[in-house]
Length: 157
Length: 206
Image (cartoon, rainbow over all chains, first blue to last red; front, side):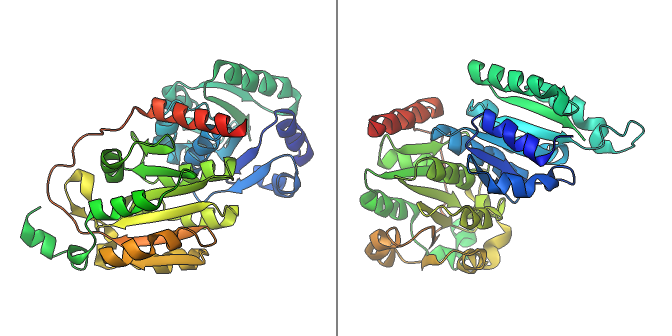
């Protein structure tokens, strides 16, 4: 898993302006580092549905936000994402923590539904398991940016 | 909805007529105001004006207009953003009031059109129809600039000043429910509106 420093360095390298997030037990440890970065603004939202619309407004206004949420929040926020990404066509990029992905024997239904749900939305996605695959993240982000399309990076937890 | 049903939604039945409410807003908005409409207001606003800084957010997701407006306010701090939301939409995303205050954005005004019902689906009551205190909710969320109007003249007289205090601002308008056909969207396509907004931002940045 990425350390706080590694994830902040990654987001800075991507030139992200705003990180819109709701923490989970894995990404929560990044809070201090995300908050203290002078390169982007950490935006706390109350529910994940807000995150997509907030990102949409930032994109229309010329900023470059990223949504950082857990897969459970992705499930919760489906209609908001549908509207922003598909109705409005805004190229929001999201990093989504895949809860219990690394626990292969887990019976967590959030784990079971992650791939089917992401695939059903037909948003271009990649899956990485840790910082050693950082290049994959960079490549996917820039590919989506260049194509002006939404993208998802699933992060195994 | 018939007239008898309308009378049952007091105090909304004595509220401001929605066209009056929006016309007043149109009169006081400036060329530095981005106006985001939603649901019913996105159908009515284009009948009143057609401004390059309008975003008639349709198609939309209920509850999405305020965070969308917050994003624009943060990205374009030299503009003032007005989000017109219905009470049903706000109730679907009440936490956004807390998010707005926590964001630190000061160039955002929320104008709540509270008619106590889901108008686009035919006038069913919202859970807040019993008299939910939206001003209290805004204050409790941290809004320090909160205004409330239930009468057209009062709104007309105070609209400009209500939009000019320190933000973020929350303006609660009690709106009279109206029977009838809410029609289809008459504004420009959403992609064209977003392109117009971006063009305006680019022009101003030069």
